[in-house]
Image (cartoon, rainbow over all chains, first blue to last red; front, top):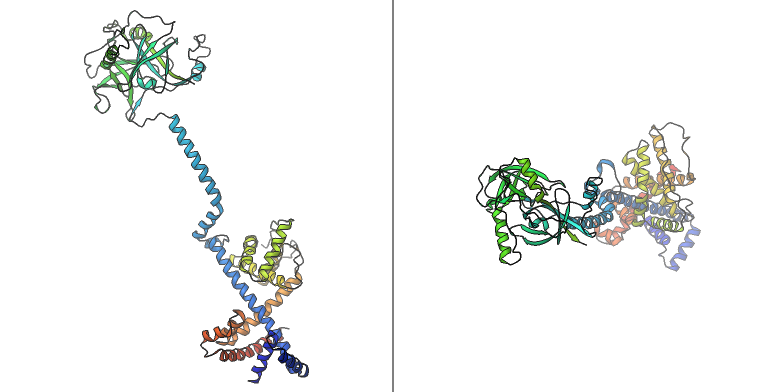
Length: 368
Length: 202
């Protein structure tokens, strides 16, 4: 019991919690009693050891805790023990900035790209495709460099921006041309080029988006009016399986395609159109579809996307209706639709020779 | 076996990082977990790859690194403390020495240490660290041989720094004085056990 009291006193003495008088007395006791003095020194040393021990233990504990924490956060990796959570947190911490920037940039690019796509691409999700042709003046110029018609400069204005193209054919020798309205879509002007690559300035006389037909008039002084057209416009019905052919400009050269009438209605039972078994390409739009006698039965305009070799032509009676409407509106009075074909008994090559002068490449453009 | 790959070490010269290191060391000396964590985070990986590249395991890496941290802590606590090198250089040197010693102890490393260049003189520090390690072990052994409730009571008072009131409540003593009495009894036993070992060690 006495030892405990002494130890208590020593602890209080070393901790500095003794009152001054008590402390003085204790100092005296140390001086006079070597045993007490020894005990004080020993205990002081022990307490120091205890201090070091406890702080080291606490430090070891913190180190373990920090180690575990860093593993948890993925900042320390111990091979297979790496937790998915840690990995994700680590990746997140590491790349959050980059991710944010990438997301922002990606978003911007996506917006710009989709914007451009919407702006540049023709909106055409329909199962049928218009056979309008996209082409570039530059491309054409390059293609004809050094060709025999190089001397004939394009009559497009310098500031023209070609928006599309297709085919067209004369409905009246004075220079009236029938084409598809969609060929001229978004364009204010049009020029036409014949099979000899002679270009003529034309004006858009009329367009009917519903019928998808348009009328152009060649206004070029170089154009020589034709007294008569080789073909006529067929009014009556056409039978299934009748052989038909078309001339058009899927390329810059006039191109012949043939096929058969496969249905009397167009896509989804559209009664204003014929269905043709024919390979038609972009650029064929607006071209005439003729029967074996050389009579026009329709205007080639669309094809089915899903099926190969299925094209649709606007029935020729729609042309008649269109011209009648124009006459009623006093827009044009002097159009005379050809009724009789003059190439009936000819072979196909001869028919084409007659017809090709009346089929034109239509170039739709805007001025900048 | 037994190649010691030297690790890339960066030489900092700017004052800012020096000040930062001083702050970290002061934090370490005061047992501040933020500072400890910062040092740990910055230095562990390089030590780990060093240990792993030299026949060590992940556990060896954390053992050695934590021991080096303790050595750094001990150094930071000394009154005359001046760290003449960067923290990372210091830790790396300590770890190299500790690991070499460990390898020699388990007989895995018998080659001469020709390639083992010392970056800074740490011999003294290591000796001090080993002495303290030994003292720590003695104290731990003495505490462990005390038995309960003495061990927990003393740990509560000296390690966890709880006051007698809370300790009395925790251990179920009717009042703080009784607990205090018990503590002194335990302390006297501990002292006996400790000094018996300590004096043999000396």
